Each structure stands twice: as structure tokens, then as C-alpha cells.
Length: 117
Image 1 (tube, rainbow, N blue to C red):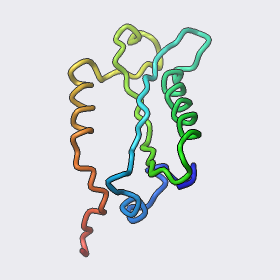
Image 2 (image 1 turned 60 degrees about the vertical axis):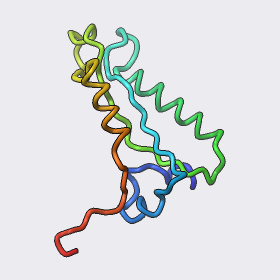
Image 3 (image 1 turned 180 degrees about the horizontal axis):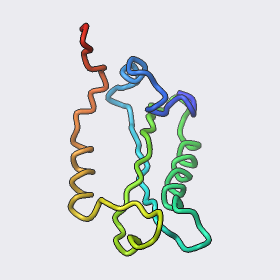
Image 4 (image 1 turned 180 degrees about the vertical axis):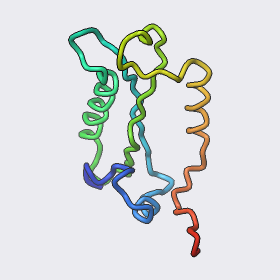
């Protein structure tokens, strides 16, 4: 699988289903969107995560069964809540519950039956 052809959101449902298997690794970058002072963009944490993923991918074999899920911008730093642009809403147990639920999903990528199926 070539870089750029492994982004979950760029695939059709049948393409995704064909790439899912017991060896497939799905990865999702999580990063806060919050203030980092007047000199850095709000996306700093998310950008760092995306950069780490880009670098990690360079070290994988070309045929590694990787699927890159869309990044998720989470905020759990209440101390940044008073700054413009900070996205909040996932704190402590709520964030842990979200991640636990995501990890426990069956991840069956087969397309759901449509109205004509």
C-alpha cells in the first residue's frame, strides 16, 4: 500500500472492506486544538502528532497493512478554555470512555446494507 492510498476517508466502502484483515493496523492521531501562546498555531499538538505519524510511516515496509483514520482534535485542558480557538469537551473519564469504546468496537468495515440490499 502506498503512502497517500491508505487514508480511511479517501477510500470507498468496498475498498476499505478489501483492505481490512487480521493484520491491518488502523491508526488515529489525537491532538488538542488549544492556545500555545501568541507565537504558535492552535493546531500545534495535532500537527506534532501528524508529523510523528508521517515519520513513522517512512520506517514501515511499503506493503505494511496500515490504514490512517482521520485525525481527531480533542480538548481536555480546561486551563486553556479561556483562550479563543480552544476546543474543549473531553475531560478525564469522558475522554477515557470515548477511547475505550473506540478500542472495543468490532471494526467490521463491511458496508452496511442499503435500502435495496
